[in-house]
Length: 302
Ligand code: NDP
Image 1: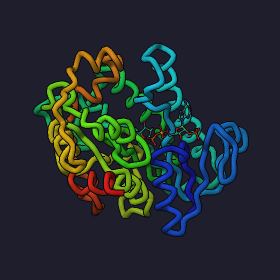
Image 2: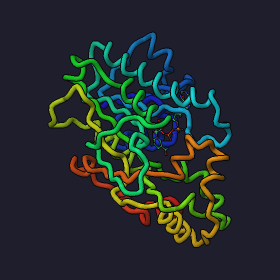
Image 3: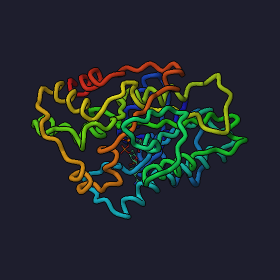
């Protein structure tokens, strides 16, 4: 299978590329930078979709970029890097004489309203309530294919929680303070912490590209990209401390995180959603790292 991956040079994209190549598939990355095995977004717009059987979009300015101050310019980049790239790729698919059989868009669980009690599945109704949920709405809307194309191209949306892996994402920023014994719960610690190991997220994306017996639909099929274990921030903190054999006695108050990061994005750390991967499990996907202990041991031990 030939697979086109927007943002394939990033943390999740590198893992997905490794997995697909191991399975014998061919990968072309869409990037802002030209290079071997890559096309640029400009080339996609001018030259149309290269021949492929599946397309994925993983592009997006890093929400947790520690080097960027939370301001209007950053917020604009968060939107445009996701919505504009998704629009370009969806339009290229719709305009292609031979569209791929699968189109997978990776968004996020920020569409579900943070709550200590509510539990969400892919079937949960939601309406935008803050900046990040508005982003998910616009992003997923930008990926919708016209009905005539969707009859032959299966549309899938995957909503991951915090992606855990050794080569990037949240763990990269958390490892140093935890190694130094400076780790601790964030905010109350009681908030849910939806997470997934990067290998499992890559596995779910690859699984979603496989031909499916389901009739293609005008509405994308949603899969929650989270581990089946439902954990809180406290449980995550204690387990990481246990695996690293380090104390975790320095809680970080919510107002400090809000002040450092801006409350609109700090919500990802200080509040959270209980998200169940109901359809992901029903589809037969088998997790390599279904619980925190196995996921963190793999990340820390390697
Ligand atoms: P990365 O931060 O690694 O970024 C992926 C790619 O996006 C980059 O390699 C880059 O490709 C491209 N990109 C970055 N900034 C911009 C920009 N300003 N404009 C256009 N393209 C840009 O992302 P991840 O791999 O961690 O995540 C993949 C997707 O999953 C993202 O959309 C993210 O929002 C989503 N997600 C990630 C989570 C996580 O914990 N990591 C959690 C939930 C959702 P290039 O430089 O080649 O153009």
